[in-house]
Amino acid sequence: MLTLKFIQENKEELVKRLKVKRFDAEQIVEKIIELDNNRKSTQSEVDQKQAEMNSLSKEIGMLFKQGKVSEANEAKSKTADLKENIKELNNQLNEISKELDVEVVKLPNIPHLSVPEGNSEDDNECVKEGGEIKEIEGEKLPHWELIKKYDIIDFELGTKITGAGFPVYKGKGARLQRALINFFLDEGEKAGYNEVLPPIVVNEDSGFGTGQLPDKEGMMYHATADNLYLIPTAEVPVTNIYRDEVVKEEELPLKNMAYTPCFRREAGSWGSHVRGLNRLHQFDKVEIVQIAHPEKSYEALEGMVAHVENIVNKLGLPYRILRLCGGDISFTSALTFDFEVYSAAQERWLEVSSVSNFENYQANRLKCRYKGKDMKKPELVHTLNGSALALPRIVAALLENNQTPEGIRIPEVLVPYTRFDIIN
Image (cartoon, rainbow, N blue to C red; front, side, top):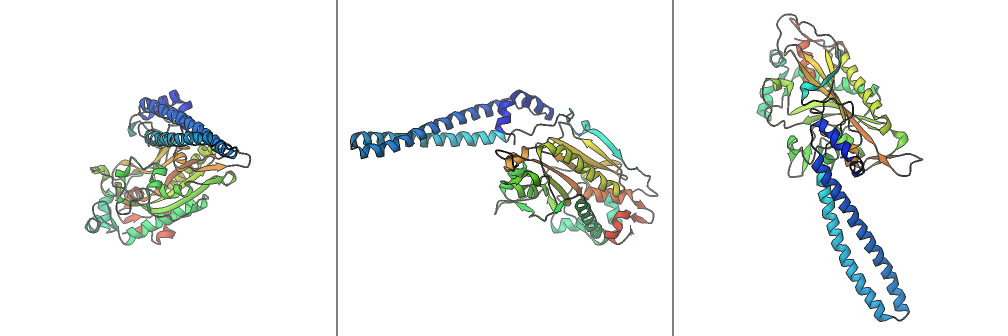
């Protein structure tokens, strides 16, 4: 969330910049500033009365020592009144603070100055294209027909066991899935990321820390008996490793990666664009996360984009990199680049990664700070994350783009992991 100091000092610029995200912030900002001013004045009054009560308490002891009993009792009476008054003011302060917290989390992150104007994904800016879109030999089948033809992924069996959107990977399909996970992790290790294996369920504090709660709970599976949430992405547990932490400046950047299954309810999704592997309720993903110095976070973002591009290149997939416009960028992100790969049989682009800089928006919710030797007090870090990569649409594109009359060819870089070079 945005800091109160920033909101107070940049009211007009904040309202202007959030219009790029198609968010009208004027009334909320006004209310936040009013509540914050009220909070400060109430706190000042509490401090003043507390100081007065402390002074009287010292005076009472002196008066009793001097034998001035009536004056001491009068001072005690004033102290009792002050104590009651302070209690009432603290109750007011708590109510103001609660209301302030509710309002502050309603504000999205400010978009970076490079975020283009726009209302939807149609207005995103293509900043780079790579790879070659090749013609398919022979019959051109979409992946949902290929997986039946070669019996490598079973949607009907997944529906029987759980429900729609929970496929069962079989034989070479399962081995391809495992191969991609290991390949992505090995590439991450080469790029300096430390592997962690976090829990795949999180508590409310973790959901709040990265911005999934309080307003996106409908997107997550909720284990109500224990009030825990299945993770929509490894971003949530991995970033929360640093919740309520002060890290040393010289340790930055902190680079972690994790493979996890991810769970998304995706309520209301239907149509041909979500057929097969295009959209699932459970899928595998390798996530990269950085905790960075504020002055170097955009340098870190460039490195993360280059890392994802390198992986896609090695898989031999045609791709494009999009800078998301204001109307398509997420609530918490300051700047996001999406990667899309071309699906030859579907003849359309499929999103396979989002790489984002959240600046200090998540860090303020997480209370994640850094401190250097010459710093008087800790300051907020910047957080970044990206998919490197999400598997379902990568698998869809690999199957479709590499189909031949003899079978589906496996990219050379994956053969040491799959231990086969064709699915037939």
